[in-house]
Length: 212
Image 1 (cartoon, helix red, strand yellow):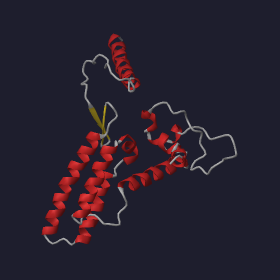
Image 2 (tube, one colour):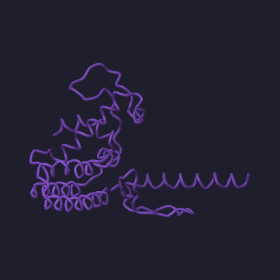
Image 3 (tube, one colour):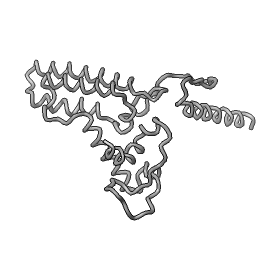
């Protein structure tokens, strides 16, 4: 009985530490909580293939993506030297490199900085200069916007979707001064961190577009 109670205390301590870490995001100086026995404190964490830092930066994720894609470019060059035609190389690029770059973008694209996005676009321009990528291919920003739209519509119109319960309530008014892409209430905006969240970005998308 004593061991079970001690285990409960240790688990609760881990949860409390994680919550304290998250609520201190906006402070200039972060004082981490005491370390927990048996747990290693790290600067980044990789979840389902996406790497994010304790400061909610995805720079390391972009580093990993571009490094892996650069290796694929070397493989494409080898295939070209062995006689693979350019049209086939572009198909391989789209199936491997483009798919790798666009993996789970709704989860991390909102947290990417202007420098992160510039590096990805520079890599794609380099691939275009080598004739690995089609000149008619959409920009990476358009690819991410399309992925956002597809996922948001899937959540919005499917009550069985695992993320459906995270949507705010439906608006109770029946009039609108502008066309909106959804009928949900707009939650309060509390910080830059929450603004970068996928659902928050999509819920405020119409407002952001009208201000441009």
